[in-house]
Length: 137
Length: 366
Image 1: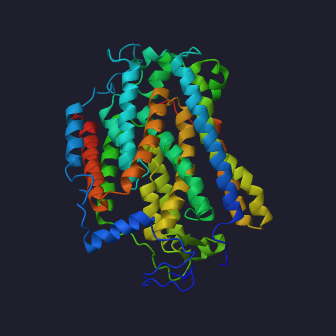
Image 2: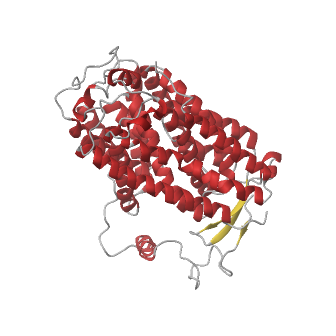
Image 3: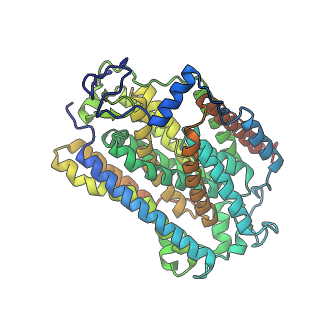
């Protein structure tokens, strides 16, 4: 069990998620400022939100005629959907980190952990793909 | 197992004198302050914070607040502008204030914050639970991403240990998120109420062990290499550890993931309990690794909520900012707080939030 207290792979993973997370936070602040300042016109007016936020998500989608999944990529010219970029980055940080360290595990001949990372990447990709979503209750 | 190699040669546990080149157990001023209290300081003592009646004040405020009842009963799309005359930015500021307080309390209580956030914001503000849970997941995720790199660098979080566990929790979280978005809000509230009361029971009864005894690593953990060494900076010693009962723990983590997805929480408290009490990981490793697991659990669940349209930006962003600022403010408070009182504050709040969720779910107190 003679392992270093902190392995190189662990430090590398820490560096990747640290940078990506900071980038996501900064971008989120900027895009939210753009959203509430009205620099880019939002898809749903801010004044209308109190009428929606007490309803289940699928009622909101129906009423505001918002498409689910990755459809927001086509609406980035709206101030509200612009904020989805940093949120997607935030939700993609760990995927990125795992992708970065994957080859290092195989290089160190840690095949089992490498395979676990591959399965984890598949699970995350499945979640991020938009295949798994619900139309609500 | 408690294989502990001395990190600073010649330094025993009972040795009171500081050794050159050894990191002190605590910041100098703090250590001195503690010592002064022991021998009886001539200076007047600052009263311990927070006062024991703090939870009563918060609970009284929440009772009086009440908040407008969410329109859960309403069927069909809402008409815009139906949320009352209060402008959106007032609610955003109120949410920011709530998140700030939850950020302080969760940090002081040693929780990730998701559970307190969902129960308090979901119980007292007019936002639907779908949006609150999505915001909670992103709040817990941002908190875990902030803490993760530091924990990894200091060896408190173990990437290798987190890999098989996070696979289980993230898989469970996807199923949980789908289930959670399918269930009616009042059912979620009832289930959340019972879960929170369960957490209170665990917090009251569970006796965590700093260095659990692990006689022998199980076959699975041996093959996965789930063992390690970390430097305990408080004692200046290297602590080697290994884990056991891995198959049982992995099954538990699958259930934890489902629960996290259903309620939109990080469930760090549950991760720590399983890592420490079932697997036998040292408490610091359990706490640190739990954050790494939360990153994966909440990432998987957040994608499902995101794709299901549960992102309400004026709920998400003030919550993230409020919780982060609250956590920073909490660090300043943490150094002069009486831990035992704090435990009571968090337990009292959780107890109240759990009962409130149950009453709301049963339609008794809307």
